[in-house]
Image 1 (cartoon, rainbow over the protein chains, first blue to last red):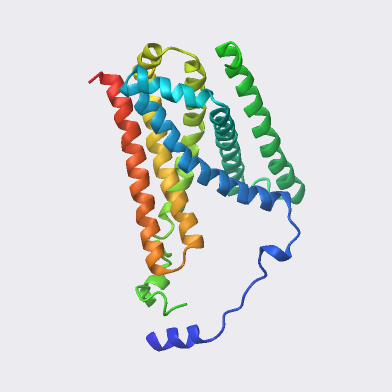
Image 2: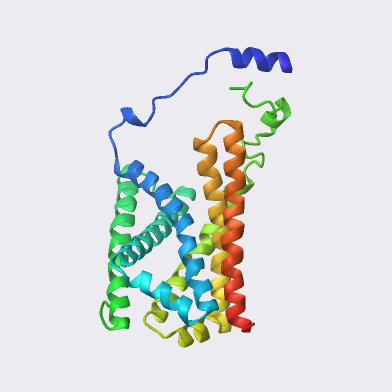
Length: 139
Length: 130
């Protein structure tokens, strides 16, 4: 057993061509965007924790969070957070559909991928318009 | 490659257990938490939209009410497991040196535990008003 393994490892393994030799396609770009939004949302959970802890702490702590979220940087981060969350969710639904072996034909997978992108941008904009309406305009 | 992974025995390879030493279990758990994440994310977005621009007192009252608090807790715990698996996958893809791999896997666990516990604690405090 051990002998077999050493001889196997000593032989150079066949390697496949990597990312840089392919023409970038929507599906592969959206694949890496899914991972990047996932990683961003991972750290974005810090913002949610901060907001919840501030609410649990008291009015002063909550005012600090509100000040940050209302600032230009805060709004930019929140807008990016909203889009990343919705995009990752729609991308996840696309992957779940693919997991069932549906929508894998060339035209279908391009369409699904494009729908993810357009859907996430549209839903984010709608949510922000609704959000501003709820608050009575940007502060 | 095989010298760099002295802990990977022939039996491990035969059983198909990957570098995280847990086979396809996480693959399936990632699917389960992603399905659960769809309604929970929609719930989170609705809750946050409903809380925009409200006073601290109103936010505390709404976040502490049972349906909202339970939705938030489900979102936080489900997301915690989902993002723990996801970040582990990213680490295993890009960090190959054994020492850094172990350290970043540990850091992933510590981060997820800390953020999750902080969020859960806040929700419980808002709910029970301790």
